[in-house]
Length: 478
Image 1 (tube, one colour):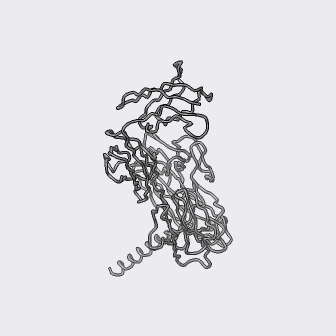
Image 2 (spheres, rainbow, N blue to C red):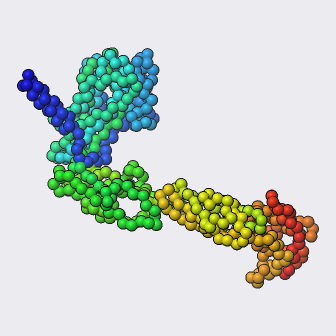
Image 3 (cartoon, rainbow, N blue to C red):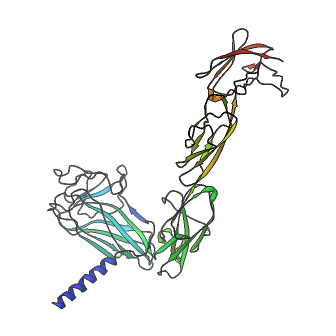
């Protein structure tokens, strides 16, 4: 009994070691091969189906047929799942109804690899049959040299049916040979067709696998939020496990959340000093490759990503001055944009609420208010507005537009645009010669650029609320 138990333990340990050997314990690079089968409008056929399989445009292929599609539904009395999208959404996938005889259903020659380099192979597979009693797909993925020597292979075993459509990832690792930049991917169906053995295949990738690379921001973090005006230099430190004879380092930067990466010139050590930048979202990583392969992106493996968010201060806008007629109140007309800012007005004298962006002010004498806006990341900005308290609106009764730089314009100093008043000026013939609404009054004594003669003009000032209409005369003297 002891011998049997010992033998069983050895078998389990060997099996566990075999499974573990399929996992990359180091760093991974970007995909150098990505077979996605294209989109619905432009399907990708960059593979060779064996002669035993026939292509069809029908999204419910029969035994021994396959198609490239973006979805499938209602197949064979709805015995197949409704698959509404590919693995990632928005693209196409390969849909295979197995032939009656087991055999290959996919072959592709993959080029552009690096010699003596370990790669991760991965693919996403779905059993599209609903019936758990049907034939289970049993697939072998094999990576071979172009002369047919097997570099490594992986068998899925029977892929069970699922209650709902589900994509599962299968993968393993292989190492290219000396001087070889191409391999052959072979996918074999080990089960017969008939009642079941119907699969969807998508997103076949090859990624370089190498030593483990760990990068940190000095202090141990991997992400920092900083205000643009508080930036200092950041030091990035990386560590590399063994595995490369002559490693070459290259720090990279991404400004589009990792969609693309650019080499940082001169950043070729385990340590990198990041200097202050403009506001934005910055991501960094260290890539490593053997010296002979360093110039080929597909040979590099990458560290984890370090993220620096550089935040702007809030943008505060307000008029430099507001005019308040004594006994009334006025909105301060501030606007603030930024990352979820909070507000504080000082001093609180005469304000309806010091924590909102646009309180009502009703001070009894002239005062200057300060608004401090603080973003959710602690970035601050200030704005100032002076409130001048007056007894009423003074309207000048004359002006001299003779371009001597003195009294050349008719203005109404205390008519704040916030009053939204309409000011109209008429000549002695009742002709409207000037009008403005909700803005500063600044008449130069012309009509459409034509200077008006000396004389007396009538003005009307109408307010939408609070204040009564004002009427009077203004004399133009040349």
